[in-house]
Image 1 (cartoon, rainbow, N blue to C red):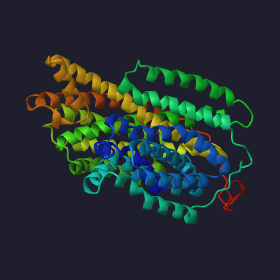
Image 2 (cartoon, rainbow, N blue to C red):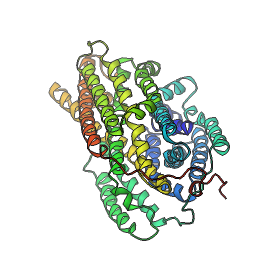
Image 3 (cartoon, one colour):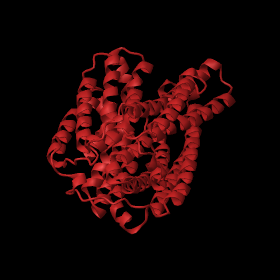
Image 4 (cartoon, helix red, strand yellow):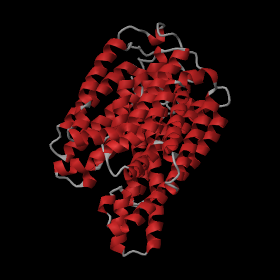
Length: 495
């Protein structure tokens, strides 16, 4: 499960640093090639809810193996793509496969492990997957520099084959209790449409403007589809169990996961650019500077089972948000006063520590408060909030970043063409394209904009801590879960 989580999470962020190389090799415009990032995220986020419901009906291992197989084949096609259109289509297939891997993940772990072992398994899975996401830009940069951009996809093939073989030999086939229920095709299509129409405006808003037709049109369609989905799920045999949403602990974990991803991965792109400025643009140096973040994610993640055995979910999650917020405040301080020793290092350590503490209790609670036969749906529901949180964070903090940059350049009273060119270079971290006379202004403007992003994300963390204490403090009804050997989770091989 963790190996699958690594390649899925890695592919969310690994491509960003390869865009220029892909554009040059495939002779495509950079804006066109940027869809290699967007296509994966859109497809990944859109299918999570449906994949979770599907795993409750046909089997979680079956959906997991089908997903990793599709992802591996799509990775091969990405690595061999002759043009940008083929690459984008293959990235869509990668995203669909990734959602089928992630949606049943926590439900699979919860079905196989009990008690403290379950906490250790979920904490290990969360720590490794989160660290992979943070390392994505670094891994991508190293592969692009050493062997070329195609290997950021081709490296997935041996890993994917190994995961499939491991799943078929080491992962029990858990026959679902409600396998006889038919799939709600209408509900599945509406769920995909809702998530797709929510992701698309968030991704296009910073580029086209929030008042553009490309943003408002899909957003309006999404609202209509959401009402249609709610209405359709009141029928017998519908895909979604609307009663699950009335469980405060489940809806609370979904909201908290959204906020946690918004304030962590939503800021990561700006943090990577900030570290790139400090490292002079070297991917290797950026990787070294990210080690406090990824290292603390892994180390604290491995200790989470012990912490969960001693503390309740509410104080753990709230303290995780508090630590993450403190880390963001330290990063803001490092941007405002670079001469303060250790501020950047401490900020990254606190960020990683907070992220490692937040997610394992949320993941465990999401599948622990629902009936076992609906654990896939609960896992898919909470997982669907994660990419939405990341996309929302990038969009919201991108607006904060751009607004602060605009204010900085407006006060500098530069010529319009010069200001536009310099601002475009600063927004993408390409300081080598800035005129030497304007470099101090560009660096100061970037630092101030990054500080604003960190403070805004810290405010989100404060809200997350308060919400965690409110919705997770009440004891949640724990769903009874039969042992794996009983009828609802049989170890017999699925047909």
